[in-house]
Length: 184
Length: 172
Image (cartoon, rainbow over all chains, first blue to last red; front, side):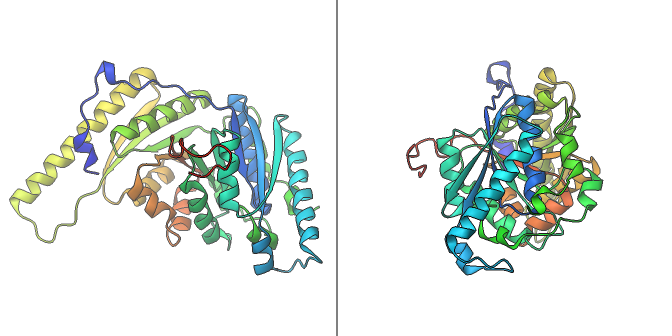
């Protein structure tokens, strides 16, 4: 807070220009119940800027083998295919509301994959699902949000609700255990 | 298919023509870098027609015992910080009139969360350089509590931290 004392008083020539552009919003989804709300929120932001929305899911084979949950896969291929289909399904959902939406399915460590995609796609904003405050996955979400945002060069938004009291009080949707394997 | 397709009515409404963000709380440490954060937020607020509240939380150093000199130094530092915030506020208000300021003393994370809750903020924004605040906010044990307390999305503004990264690999 001592930096406050180092700042000089504002003057006309030091004024920061108040403008920004946003052309692409990258939304990291883990395909849990909270992902759809996050994607819709991100699309709402994008619409204001007429920006494109890319939903990204990073399928982490290492995570799948570590945490099986109650969804047992015959093989990693089945799990990967299932995740890709679910991401595609989510994109279809968003396209009903906002046409400028596409998807990016990646394989690897979520934080690294999302950082790479953000750079390659020149994302102007990365949105990460923070999970509902009552969710048992919230600690994992906070940890992953920190990891993902650490090396990003663009703004990062952690979505944990619409901001309304009603939404904050709303119970989280049932969690899919495969959420633990992937992004955010 | 799965619970992805279950209805999320509150979020779906937000994609329509209703304002998605009506009030933004900006946590600023008043540094030079924070001016860029504020500039970004003003542009964001303008898009949404949102009200803006600039908040600075003055965090006193822990004092083991109080002396008149220490009290005077504290008061001077507090007053200086408040004046800098006022200057920033006046500057922003010339460009974006729907702006308020709030100066607080205490723990930044707690105070920002309290402000966000009290003002029913739709978005809290802070700068990526605001390291102490971010470290606390993203600390595994505190993040859920803070995010719950704010009850709204949190945006961390960053600019050019990996601008020299390899464009092919994305790695710094």
